[in-house]
Structure formats: C-alpha cells, structure tokens
Amino acid sequence: MFANKSSALANHQDDIMSATMDTTFGDWLMDKLNQKDWSQADLARRSGVSRTSISDIISGRRQVGKDLAVSVSEALALPLEEVFRAAGLLPSRPDSDEIVDRINYLYHSLRDPANKQKALEYFEFLRTSEDKGDYRVAQPSKKREKA
Image 1 (cartoon, one colour):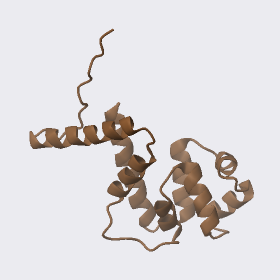
Image 2 (cartoon, helix red, strand yellow; image 1 turned 180 degrees about the horizontal axis):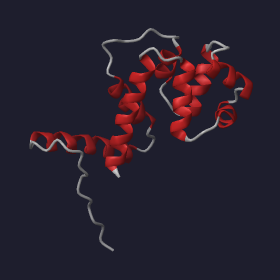
Image 3 (spheres, helix red, strand yellow; image 1 turned 180 degrees about the vertical axis):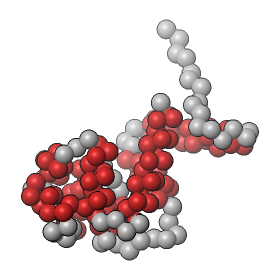
Image 4 (cartoon, helix red, strand yellow; image 1 turned 30 degrees about the horizontal axis):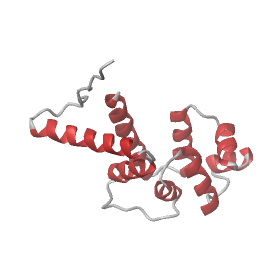
C-alpha cells in the first residue's frame, strides 16, 4: 500500500520537474489529465469551466487566469501554488522543495486526526529504516487486531 503511494509521490516530483522545464501549462495540464485518466470534458465538469475554455488553454489559444487556476486546482486536488506556478501566475521558486510542498498539502488536506497520526508514523518509520541502512521503500508492520 505505502509503496504505491511512494511511487505516486516520485511520479508527482517528475511531473513538477517537467512542468518547470520549458513546457506549457497546456502540456502540464494534459499530463495531469492523462494521469487521472480524465478527458477535457471530465475536467470541465469537475471544475465548472467550459469544455471550450479547457481546450483553448491546452492548445495555447487562451491564457490561464487566477479564477481558472483556482478551479483547476480544486478539481485536480492539487495545491493552488503548484497550479499557479505551472500557469506562470507565480514565479518559480528555485530554492523550494516541491515534494515537501506536496506532502504538506496532502497532510493538511487530511481531516481525520488519526490519519494525520498515521502519516506521521509512516514518515518516522521511513526515517528509522534509513537510519538502519535500509534505503528501499518499505512498509511498516501491520498491527493485527484481535477478533
């Protein structure tokens, strides 16, 4: 379970890097849609933005504004700052760690305090594993519940 999440996070880092390396917002957005297996119509429906506007942005015929970036961020469940940076609405942050930004966003998106605690425990588990020289992505041992 956690290995898949780690893989997803690594893919997310690659996505961010590709978005900042001379790609257009349209390319970045299409990549996000492909990752979710969404069509432009799916994004339009979930974001409340017209299908034509989505198509125009992807093709580069229309610039991305603040309101549209907010709608895309909410629909894709991505940090607003990430979408703004990909759209060129905020300058890039060469000193930023996009993975930390994403982890922070995901952590603060959790509503259940128990899930926040599980996330913290998993990071502590990974850190302990590295201290022991185990650098592979591992899963924490599962506690068995008594029936």
